[in-house]
Structure formats: C-alpha cells, structure tokens
Amino acid sequence: MPKTSYDDEIAALKQELLRSQKMASLGELVGTTTHEFNNVLMTVINYAKLGMRNKDEASRDKAFDRILAAAVRAEKITNAVLGMARNRSEEFAPTELEPLVDQSLLLLEREMQKYRVQVRKEFSAAPPVRAIGNQVQQVLINLMTNARQAMPNGGELVLRITHDAKAGFVDLTVRDNGSGIPREQLTKIFDKFYSTKSGPDATGKGGTGVGLSTCREIVDAHHGRLRVESTVGKGTAFTVRLPLWQEKSESAAAAPIAPLGVPNSLSSSTTSLGT
Image (cartoon, rainbow, N blue to C red; front, side, top):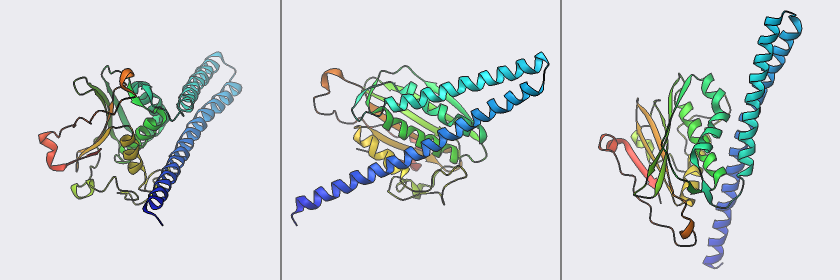
C-alpha cells in the first residue's frame, strides 16, 4: 500500500479519535448540567412545599424569594448552555474570553462549592482572540475540573486573563494551590491515555488520560501554546496562550508563536509544551 494511503488512514483515525474525545467531554458536560438543574428543581420543590404548609406571610415570602433565586439561577444555566450551543461552529471567529470563562464557571459553580474551592477572577482588559468558542470552553472546563480534583480538601482556584500586546496574544491561566505534579510526571501529562489519577472521582470525571491530550490538540490547532507550571505541595498552573483576532491577516499565514518564557523561580519544575 502506498505511503500516502497509510498517511491518510492515520489522519482519518486521528480525526475519529478526536471526535470520540469531544463526545466524551460533551457527555461530562451534559452530566454536570443535569446535576445543576436537579439542584435547582429540588430547591423549587422544597420551598414550594414549605409555602404550601405554612400559611403565614413571612414563611411564604421566604419561600417565594428562594424559588425566585432558583429560577434566576436556572435562567443563567440555560443561557450558558445556549451560549455553548451557539458556539458549535467549527470556524475561527473573534472570541471574547471573559464571557467564556464566566459561562464555564457557572456550570461548575456548585461543584466548586461542594468541594470548598474558592474562585478568584483576575481579568485584565483583553481584545478578542482567534478561536472556536466551544473548543476553548472544552479546554477551560477540563482544566478547571482538574484543578478542583487537585484540591480534595478545598483551596483556591485563580482564573486570570492577561493581554500581551507586544506579542499579540492573550493568556488564560487556571491556577490551583493543590497537591502539585511531580517533575517526572510533567513531561507525560499531555500523552494520550496517561493519567495521574487512579480513575474517575465521585462525580464520574477524570482518570481516562484523554482530557489533557485533547486540550493540547485543541490549543495546537488554534496556533496557540499550552504551558504547565507545577510545584509539589504548592499547586499547578496551566496557561493557554491564544493569538489575537486579526481581521486583515486571517487569510495570511499564521504568525510564529511567541514564547511564554519560564519564571526563574519555577524553572526547575516547569515544562512548556506547544507548537
């Protein structure tokens, strides 16, 4: 069989694997969303029963307030899911990162609360990046879930957006103060089917070894870079670097990727991967 046929077959298999990985991520997202809606419905049902049992005005007002708050949350979840549905296009477009982060965080908010993870957002003003919105959300949800799993006893999750105007990139960082990753494992974490976890956690997420490899493939396809910094006992930070949207140069060749650089204080325990 000619070499080109082998190459075509390998390329087709890679595309099929990527589609399977996307479906697995979609399944996890559906599970998360369903769980969130179930929480909202339980709140509505319980406070509706409370209002029906108690005839006094104070109890009924409290029940109505809680039902209204649950309905508002349901609306936000619905809008987040609809936003992801509208972003199902596979075409690159000018994309604001801050709304994507907020929508993704909304879907994981109760999960973060359950595991006592405090979220701190540090968003600097940044122009749109060249991205496929639903794919960036897939990366973001995966990284935030990994960060939560690294802090089983609670901790702090920092989400940071910064704009490197000189290089023409926007950096999106997901940082936890969890257990950290040993240096000997850092160079392997983006390998397919390699996992530092023994299996899925109580929420059914993780342990398959395909999440981070898919993240890297997505970022590579965006002509971006995915970098990890980690220190055992102090935590881990993943930084996604994406190019700015350039209206006039979208038909031109992609510019070379500007290096992220390695801070001196972390250079002994840091790996940087990307194209």
